[in-house]
Structure formats: C-alpha cells, structure tokens
Image (cartoon, rainbow, N blue to C red; front, side, top):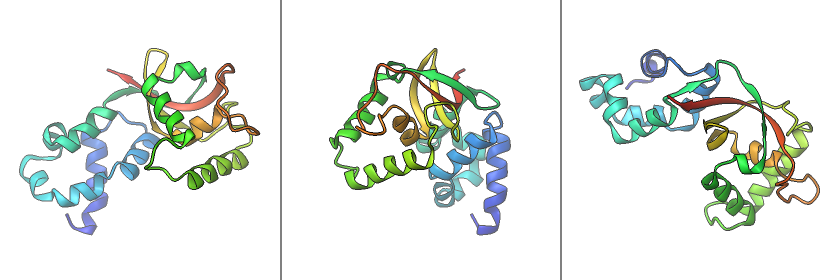
Length: 179
C-alpha cells in the first residue's frame, strides 16, 4: 500500500468495516492496534479478497474486528463504578502491574505515568476526564480498550497509591456491549 493510499485506506476501513464506531473509538483503535502497518504488509491479500472479507477472515484482522464489533454509545457516558465492576481478568492484570508482578512493565515508568495522570487530571474519578473505552457485559467492564492507566489511576488513593476498593468512582467512557 502506498503512502498516498493510507488516508483512503483509513476512510474505507471506517466506512466499510467499522461504520458503527464513534470517531473517538475508531481513532483510538486505528492509532493503537497496529492496523495501518499490518495492512501495508498484507496489501496484496487485501487487494485480492477485499477489505471487508479480509477483516472477517484474517486471524489478526478478525481479532481486531471482533474486539470492536460491539454496540457502541454514540457519545461518552459517565459511569459510576466500583472496583468489583471491573472484570476479574482485567482487575488481576491491573493489580499485577501495580504490584510489579508483570516483568513486561518497568515500575519506574509505570509510577511516573500514574503520577503524571494524577497531577494533570485533578478531578479524575469524578466523571470529568477524557473518555476511556470500555467493553462491557451488563454492568461489568470486561475489557478496557482505551484509557487503562486513567481508569486504574481513578481507583488509586492519590497519597498512598493503594487501590480503593470500597469507594465508587465516576468515569466518562464510550461503552461497547456485545451485539
């Protein structure tokens, strides 16, 4: 795929494969899931079978399609969440990262990021934040697709940096639910 075709690819992907995504969600997905780079590598295959079929049959592309093929809120909503409203797998991932149990994340950089979030978003946890992106099943957040650090930081005590499990937070989010 040529550089001049990236905008065309982005537009076609938005219009044909992900027309149901709010712009904010699409832009986050497009910027963070590695779709553009992957499409460049697989241009010949995409051209042979078409973009829509490619995203429903190629293993990587289908995994992205399946993660985002949800019923989305058109605008962000403010949710009131308790720690237990975060699904167990997502909670475990966040807790392990926070405790330094995940060797893929450097603790110094992680702590700097949490501190920066707390310092730059003073009302975090009160519903006045850049939206995060949640995949939900009922009232449970089963996957945080965008804004994982901000979501987790909202649950942390600003002084002790301990998880506050008994006090709900308010957080602005785009919400996708299984169709």
